[in-house]
Image 1 (cartoon, rainbow, N blue to C red):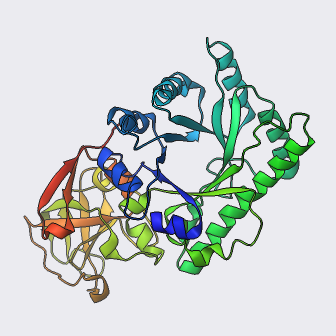
Image 2: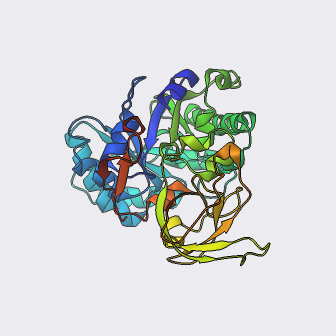
Image 3: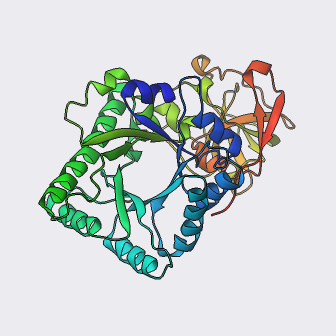
Length: 386
């Protein structure tokens, strides 16, 4: 991913929400191609895990973005995190997408002995309707006027996430989503510059804005060729963010941007019962001890809740603690050709959405492909909670 960011002409910010570990963070931030010290987290437990894991003290992480629009109930914790990061020359950044957030940040800082300015990305809504501001010129410029006038905020840049890119089925389609992310944040930066030019204080936030874009499909499509499709003059510097790529899953397989051998997560389960001919088409079914808690209930364009590695079976139905395995036609292309399954077998299941699957487990067994076979070379313990 560092190579993609470099070739595309961007810096890189690693999202930690998938693996949530010290070890995984180090692998995300330092590679043979380059290094970055910027991360984004989805929970404050992840942020504190970075700090308590020694990654701030040793300089591995210097920039933590809390990846949800900032909540009033999080300010004490974020302030404590900010103070800890500042001790080591680091920073904490936040996301804004509503003027009430600006108001309560100002009110909060007025009560502090040493008021500070929060470094903030403005979260842009690119159509996913998860979070963010729509780039409608009149309302957006009014929003930026208020933000620029705030004593509690310093605008660092503009941030978006093309979650809809998970529906991509080709490199070209993913690249078009990536270009759209750039267009959205770049247009926002252009309007912000217009607001600054009209204001009486043109020195406020006069640094180059950061245009932060990315999802795993769009980040996988970020190449030197993709950069040629960005034809507009940029009103800032590009930053690429992504996190699922560290594990990958069936949702990413559907995009065609990765193959099954690249997926690095699988769940071990045991076949606990078998039902010959019970399937709707007369095929056999079986039961395993991995259900919704083990695999999540997320689905994708590939049918089912998971695929059994090497076997012509899929996880077709799930309850809380068990799943129903269904026979499927052999698929030589994916290597799933063995129809044999019996009670007591240990099977490996690759699920739909690695981020939710990994969140269920108190530890991960790490297998190094260079060591061969199923040899466990390490155990990683993820950060849990919020």
